[in-house]
Image 1 (cartoon, rainbow, N blue to C red):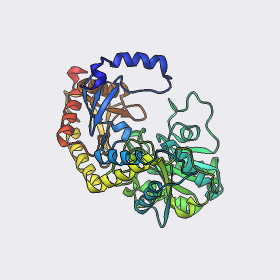
Image 2 (cartoon, rainbow, N blue to C red):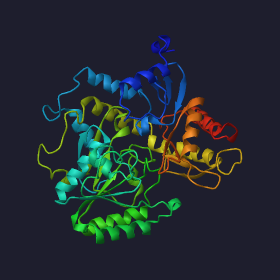
Image 3 (cartoon, rainbow, N blue to C red):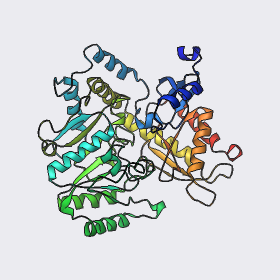
Image 4 (cartoon, rainbow, N blue to C red):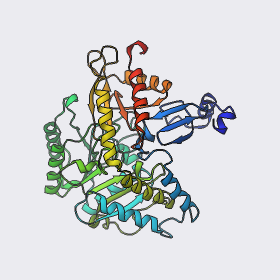
Length: 433
């Protein structure tokens, strides 16, 4: 048991302290307070063990505290922790940019710039697109999630809780419906609405960029159909619009490819990355066609902590682990195991009703529905709560909160994966619902 657990610190005590000290604007999906973690296991301050199917919201593809990541961080800590890249540059930043440029699904030569959060990466991708095109407009999609800053929340395709209390949307941001067959929206519907948008609100020559996730994250783990991406690429090429792939959640092996956009038959112009890039250390970036990345004048981009040397060292180790442990291939193996087990839940009369199993690689989601097939956000939340009681950390998402999503580390031992699936099955049982 940990030192803090021996000291009798409880989750309830910390919850009370949190209520007194921390803004209610930041939510936590559980009342559990972490004390230590390793790979796919977490122990709370009371010494209780959990299997982690959340991964810090897709941040821990290489697991908690991977030894090679920790060793790289410790080595960098012994050299220096911060200089600000704009003042004194350093090799880990350059080396990481070189590696990402070589592997990113970008047509031709690529360049990279680093920031701290996914929202920062999105904001700067839009800045680069606007600088390169001289245009103001940006088109995003309903259900998409791009961050919580003013611009990135404006791009996010969901009002509550991301926009409701913060005034009007920023100018020159528009949305088209994302195609989800279960919601009655086809690729043709999405493209028709784009035509309406171009006719009613802004001409294509006023659009700097279209931004889209390869697989919607908060929107419910819905993959972007390749037919949509092929059409968007053609629209972009015809009108000089840039295509941005928001890979903050899909990047670094989660979908079975290093980048989710590799599932498309077309290539984006800019890619935003964050989350699992640095194995739990704050780091994000924009990778793009070199000519685009050099449009902004020196000093127009950056940030005090952008590309932290600690985070860059961690990220270089993450990429080594991804390659040496073949984690992209392992994502497909994990995903197949998840799909086989979860598919068997559907239609059982002793379990909560589920449908819509989906997602590439190990980015797997499915919906909890009412007996008459309607999205059941409260039901999904209840399943996640029962799972937590049994020692499994789960997250929900989706337009109505109806989706259970699985983001287990790609390094999870199979016995722990199966243990987590056993808990999930028990948490779906009607006799405990």
